[in-house]
Amino acid sequence: MTIDPPRAAFFDVDETLITGKSMLSFLAFHWAREGRTASSTASAHASLGHQIRSGVPREQVNRAYYRLLRGSREADLAESGRLWFAREHRRGLFHPPVLEALRRHSRSGDLTVLVSGSFGACLAPISQAVGADLVICTIPEVAGGTLTGELTGRPMIGRAKAQEARRVMTAFGLRPERCHAYGDDASDLALLRSVGNPVVVGGDPALTEHAARANWTRLPGPALNGLLGSPP
Image (tube, rainbow, N blue to C red; front, side, top):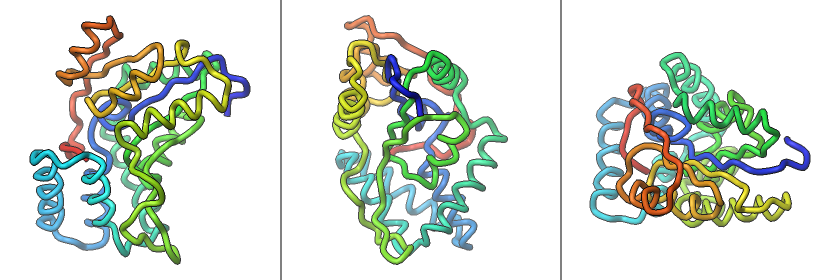
């Protein structure tokens, strides 16, 4: 980890640092390894998508996702994560302009932090590949090495991202006005507002409106590489 970093740079992951939705892509991959049918995966994706379209808060949809993993062994998920990452990396997992921004911050000695509603099975290999200093994410509850389907703490969505970013800046004595954040979705707005240098990735209407009004930096969104899309 960087010692006495001059700044921090916070990166949303899905459709910001990477080109798709890690959680849904991972679920399909993991369930296939377990021998589940494609129709099971399609049904789970449809259910989560329906919740989003119906206006269910993202925090609740995030919790619903982890209930799908109830009974999964933590070690099996970690192994699926390593294999999933290897496959997706070969396909072109990372979004080049954001990956280059992360590398630029790292070269400058900035603290690089991944902030995501996803979880360690997906994020650990991503973090290792890019050399991130910290990962702040949703943490599934584990009992006896098995996921219970519930969470330890809250989903890392919306305001929770901003609160954790502020906690990191305080812990390292960093001035928010010198820090950066990168996000692609309206749910990242609180995170972007928590720093002095927000960067909008892609064309989310709410974020592009804020970017135009406040003269925020913008980067193009990724071309999807086949990772399954649709929130959580």
